[in-house]
Length: 342
Image (tube, rainbow, N blue to C red; front, side, top):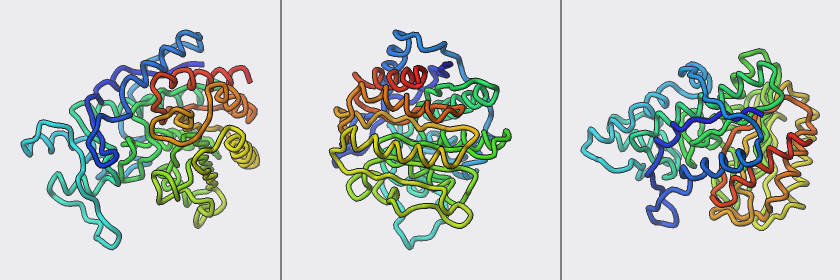
């Protein structure tokens, strides 16, 4: 299995978030990647390769051009306003307000975000571009005949909507990858999101389309972020009706309950018969994750990888969440090893 990785993610460092009513260092931090690389290297799961540049055209197939322009200029606008500290939004548009992009930087942050989890620093945009290139290089490999690849993306992406950042996510790497597979000739693509938090951005991007099946296993939105999407009755709309499947689970769910949802999601994927599967790989389902409430243990991830392998489809893993830094490498490596053994 080839692992796509670049140190350019380190530009997104020293950032903060609003958590429990306080501004704190972000849980999504560079050490996560270091621990994953360590565990993958110890098990010799495959070679590391640098991503190649793909430009913004594949990103603009998924994201609004004005939004990408904002991301690329946000730090400049912030510092031109006399601020030399990490940039966070401080207010948001409410339902009923008009969707018009303001001229001021604070207004733009409000316009293009849904929470205070997406902090921007000087190196954020370069890291975001590198993450998209990492996913797209994975597409290159799998579309070129590799059975599987692992795109070690950072920042993650599955919360990013067409024109909105949130939940540590700026560009939706998995959605960009899925669209790229379609553009390269795949008739049907399935996205299987196993992150603890609902992939609201991925769902929204493909919600009215039948050519990309999106399956999410996640914390029940009545209890858990992002709260306002992820219910079981969200099944798609228009031409996409029936091509979105959510499996919300309550706090405290253990592997028994979680694996039953995985089996149901995999059954949906198998019935769909995609040409390729994109896995949004989050391991924040782990029992000691600091911002999650499931009870999976490290050996469970071997079984997750093995079940995904039974789909018997070309598969691209795209890294999402997982914030128990000491265990993240073991849990990611277990998933990939389980897939390879399966």
